Image (cartoon, rainbow, N blue to C red; front, top):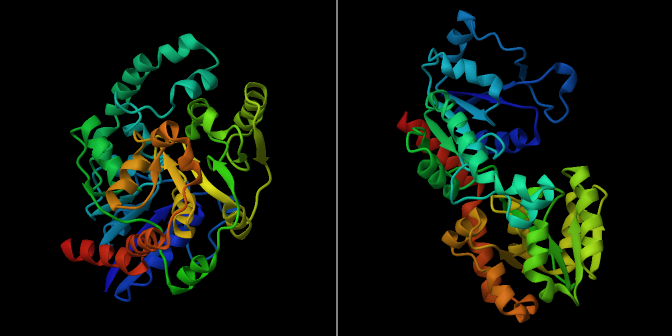
Length: 372
C-alpha cells in the first residue's frame, strides 16, 4: 500500500483529482488544505487544515517524510519555505493549474500573454505597452531567484506538454521532470451525456470569460469582416468585472455587430445548452485556457478556431484533433459555416475519450509510484 499526501488550496479541482487517485485501489490518500477553516467552501470530504505554516517544526517534516509521494495541487507560495528547506526527502509531484507557473512562461521573448490590441487596452497607454519587452526581462530576472526553490520539486504536471517545453526554453535550469497527467476524466456516463447533445444553432461564441488573456479585442480586429453578419455570444460571467465592463463599452462603440454578452453565472448544463446554439467557438488566448469549453465544443461538433501561436493550438494539433486556426478563418471567411462531418466528430471524440480517460490518468500515477 502506497501513501500519498495531497496538499492543495480549497478548490473544486482537488475534488476532481480525488476521484482519479482514489480509483487506484492500492493507494491510501490523505488531504491537507491550505486555508483558514472559515474559508473552506469546496472541499467537503475528510481533510486536515494546514494553516498557518510551521516550516520550522521537526514534527512536520517527520510527518511529510512518512509518505511515498507528496502531491501539490497548485504550488501556493506559502509552500515555498517548506520546499526551500530541503528537509523534505519524499518525492514531490507538482500538479500545476496555470496561475502558479505562468510566470515561468510569460517572460519568454517569443511568448506574449496579451496580444497587441489587448496590451494597449489593459495598460491604457501605448507607451506602457511598448515597455512590455523591457518589463518582461526584468520579471525574468526576478523569476530566476525562485528557480532554486522550484528545483526542490521532483515531478511537474502542467496542463499540457507545450507549456513544459516553453518553460525549458525560457529556463533551461528548470529541473522537475515532466509528468503527463490532468484533472479531466471521462467515464461512460459522461460519454453518454455528451454524445447525446445535438448542436442546433448558428451563433458564434467568442472567448470563455472576462479575463484579458482571452485577447477579445485582437480577435475582433482580425475577424471583423467575418463576424459582421453573425450572431455573437461573448461570455463575461466570471473573471475580471472591470475588464468586462470596459470591454463591453469598447466593443459596442467600435463595432456595429450583433453582440450578446453573458453576464450571469450559469450551471454547466445551462452553459452546454448555450454552446449547442453555436456553430463556432473562437478562443484568442495565447496561454492554455478554456480547455473544458474547447473539448466540449469539439465533442459536440462545434467548429473551434485558435491562433496558431497559442499553446492551445499546439497542444490540440499535436493530439490530431480536427479544428482550424483563426488565421485560416481570416483568409477564408466561409470557414465560419464549416460543418464537421460524422467521421470528423467521431475522430475527435475518440481522441478526447483516450486522453481524458479515468484509466489513463490512474495509470500515470501507478507508473510514477512504481518508478519511485
